[in-house]
Every structure is written in C-alpha cells, then in structure tokens.
Length: 260
Length: 97
Image (tube, rainbow over all chains, first blue to last red; front, side):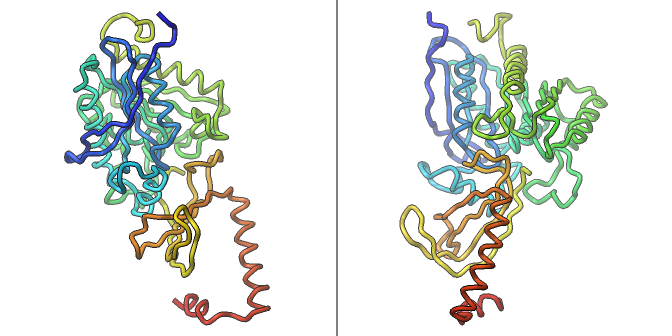
C-alpha cells in the first residue's frame, strides 16, 4: 500500500439553509473505510482555490471534507466564485443564520455518505473562523471545531452588529457544547491578541473544553501559502495541532486516522 | 480587516471586461483581504453596472500605497486635462449630484 493514498475531489450539490440547493467542494479518500468528516468554512473573499487545497489536504489525511460555497445564491453554478463574492460584499455580506444553515446542510451531507464514521468537525478561516465559533455555539451535532483567527468574535464596536450579524459570537459561548481549538497569530489586527485573551477568559470562566495556540511572528491568515502572510514554520506547527485535535475528537477507534 | 465595509459611488463611464466594453454606473470600493493578490490587504474596486443587475464587473486589487498614488495621479490628470480641454458639461452634472 502506498504511503500517499488516492483521493477524489469534486464539486457536488448539497442542501443548505432552508433546503436551498447549492454547490460544495468535496474530497474523500478513495480507499474503502469509514472516515470522519470536516466542514471547511471559507473566508470573506469567497470560495477560493486555497480553500479547495485545504479540503484536499483533509482528504489526504484520511477525512471526508466538504466546503460549501456560502455565496452560491448570488449566481449560477459555473460562475467565478470571486464575482459572487463581490456581489455578496456589495449586498452587505452574508447573514449568520444562512451560513449556519449551510454549515448544518454540509454536515448532513457528510453524515449521509456511506463512508461516514458519524463524527463531524468544523474548521474555518478568517470570517470562517468566526462562523466556526458561532456554529460551535448554535449548530447541533458538531463534535469538534477549529477557529483559525476568526475576527469579530468579540465585538467592541456595537455598530458592527447588523441585521445580518445581530449577535457577537462571544455572547453565545454559554451554548457551546463541542470541543474548540483556536489558532491565532499574535501580530493579527483582527482578532487582536487582547481580543483572543478576552475570548479565552470567557471560555475558561464558563468551563468550556478548549485549547488555544498563539504564534509569535505570525499575523492573519498565516496558513495561507498564497499570501505574503504565510509563515511556514508556524503554519506547519499549526496544522499539526489541527490534525492532532481532530484525530483525538473525530476518530472512532483508538487508532490514528492517518495510520488507518 | 475581515469586514463587509464598502464605499459605494455612482459613476458615469465604461469599462472593458471579459465580455468586452460595458457601461458602468457604480464603483464598490473596499480595503480588505484580497481574492487574488498575495498582499494581506488590498484596496479593491469593483466597477459594475447595477442598473443591469450588477452581475459583470471589472475588478482591481491594489496595495494601499499604490492606491493612494493612483488617487493623486487621477487628480493630477484631471487637473491638467481640464486645464487643457475645459470641464465637460457631463462632468459638472455628476459633480453636482
């Protein structure tokens, strides 16, 4: 058996918020077996190429992963995701409840596949990190969540709360039921190191199961190897933390997922 | 930034995109994470025709420094051009809106 196992990646239809049918990028190991699922939530600019690389990375590591296109309602299948992102931005952005519905739909897609081991995690980057924190507090059935530098979890300016984003995620922390991993760069401006500390203080006070990892010499989006922000050393360590976390909380046997 | 903050301005003009030339009536301007650029943040402008649904756009992503330089050069080009050619009637009507 080869060290690097085959995988299949494709765009698939899925049912999101209120049953709306949209597109998602889905990748899974080709070998037979039961795999944990991971929902990958993309960042504000849209359903980008790097997001698809993250989905394939999870499949390479033994997960069935899916990234719903959160802006699919703005256009038609086949339209450039960046154009849909631009339309969504001009319209004031995507509503939190709609994103939560799409995340729940993507989770249901994973659990409906014959390769599912029944466990599902969620990971998101940038605004997707915020969405992940929100999902961890409001969407049932999440076994583990990874917030990568989600901004605006703590909202210091009340004007940032809108009809589409009416509640600061930090204020919903009491409702969090799943395990949470947080990955942050200490040079990030959103969230700032102080905001990360305040988030951790709330999690600690409420007795939630969480672990935070902070990296010096890194700012926002330091996993993204298509950006100047990429910090290879910190990113490699961060990915190890992510896989260790999901392996602990999403595997259904004592064996390591990667070693299956 | 991670925000949906957009500065919107009405335009009279045209732009060349994937389908060739088109009329544009709006510019959506924002400073945030890019889609394509390797920079952490960019000054992005989407030129669209919202009167026709806003589906097509001509987009640019600029560094903050170069965006400011561009603003200066636009002002300089307008000043020298209008000194040479006069201020067009259409431009006056837009400025008054």
